[in-house]
Image (spheres, each protein chain N blue to C red):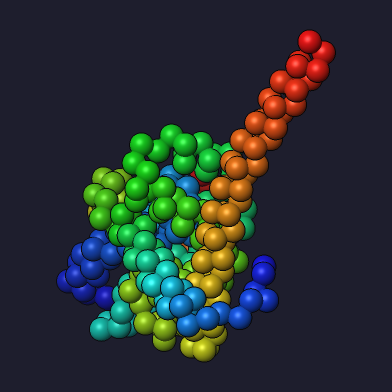
Amino acid sequence: MSAPNDDRAFKAELASLIPHLRAFARSLCGDATLADDLAQDAMLKAWKARASYKPGSNMKAWAFTILRNLFYSEKRRSWRRQPLDPDVAEATLVANDDPSGSMELLALRNAINQLPDDQREALILVGAGGLAYEEVAEICDCAVGTVKSRVSRARKAVAEILDANEASFSSDDALQAGDVFDDLLGQVEDLTKTA
Amino acid sequence: MNDTKRPTKTDTRGAAKRQKRIGDQLRQLYDEVASEPVPDDFLKLLEEADDDADEPGEDKPI
């Protein structure tokens, strides 16, 4: 069994990883409260499993593996990802006071939410989590080439989803405004005819 | 969706720029959470976590 000193050092390092566990969990489950539940469970699980950690290896990658496995294995748990409610997303968009950056960020989060699980996690871990392809391959238990292709497919899909959303937003607005205008014109015409 | 169109050079350059922007925003999303102050209950839970390693047992219900 590990010495008390090692345990203390392990605990300190694990504590320093909490922000990353929270960020990774948030990207997996979307909802902030549920994500923190998942991150806490992963943290405690990592603590209990500390004997299986190889000192000197990347503890972040190791802890992410635990978090990810927890997320996928416990299917009934409430922090399993639920599809983002489009109404909620739209309400948030509308309610947002700072249209410059955060609207775009929300659109991106929405797009990421639509990715298949395997593409989403690869994109997050490589693109934001600062992990190497090799480390992500270990976390996701697949080949390095698979990680690369998932990331590349995810990037492409996100751009496409963002494009499609932009197009549908603007064309919807234009269509509705046009319809209203035509409708008004029609009514005016009817009025003038009957007068 | 409609990937029948062959990308031109300008498209490719635009796409690369676009991807860089998506990448920056992706990191921003992650960093936003990672830079939040850690909620107290995390540190408290870890502080209180006992020293029994690999304890079997049921997960606590939510």
